[in-house]
Image (spheres, rainbow, N blue to C red):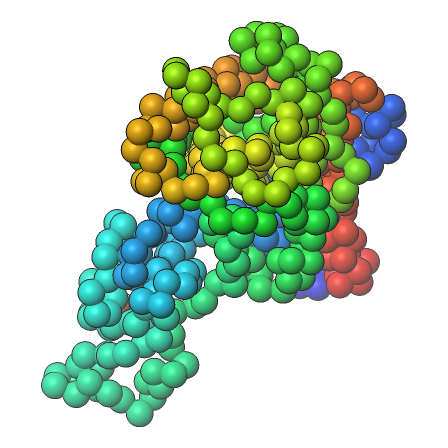
Length: 404
Ligand code: FES
Ligand SMILES: [Fe+2]
């Protein structure tokens, strides 16, 4: 086989990696994504590029690097990234790789004093990623060489954007502007375009799940499971008090009409966001901004859960809760912030058994993607449609490029 034929065969193979046409049918006839989308390394790699790196995905929160000079390495879908809070307070994201021989620059969260110095041969970078010094590069005692042009050898910058303290990254660098990408959701929640404050140590928690990251999105998309999996929650926020959110392309989820504000033991409530419309008196909404950013919004708090896989079958959930006023100014309310985080932790823990159970089932060869409930699974179908459409477009493009 000639090289070009081998190339074309490889593209055809990729183009038919899985059959996703049934996913794109109307919900009454559609099937969910095939098993390989949960179990196969090859499909995981394809989704990583097409769904995560080519779009705006959630990396971390600004609260993880609160002070100027803070730097934190993050394994992002297997890619080593480095988040840095600069002296002016802005956040930069870089590939965590020295431009000399490719050593990992920063292994642990750290505070940069001056410059970041590579542990291997001492090349130094500023907090904006610029290469500052190259000791002995031209021979012992010679710190320059005519072939080493510092201005061309800064750290690889990753396109980033911060919204609601969430650090989004677009690794490919060519997604639409964030405001356009997330425009429908920004419009839906524009009333909440107000300052938020992290609840502190007790308002962050991490869970590791033995499942593909998409199952966490899918489970979060529907309230159908409330009576079975969350009986406590369902006693005050019943399945019939929820509505589907599935009308937009880039996000989906569900909302409730009976949200009750947080109360302390002595009946005090927390401050609220200002000037909200009556929809939010007892309304709250829970959506995923595709691909991996889970969000919850209420009149008195906000949370995000970022999904970061360690492979096709393991996912870590990083949850952070925020409030309309700074909890540091309200130490008398510590217990209520803690209680709120505890309530959500309880709910998310209850979900682990089902996402892991669904993962296990996807090793059974007869599972065919399943059958959606048109009444309840619209938001899940919306997510699957987004996944399938995105993959189909890239597969078709590759076939066209290969000329077959
Ligand atoms: S690899 Fe970083 S200085 Fe050599
Ligand atoms: Fe749940």
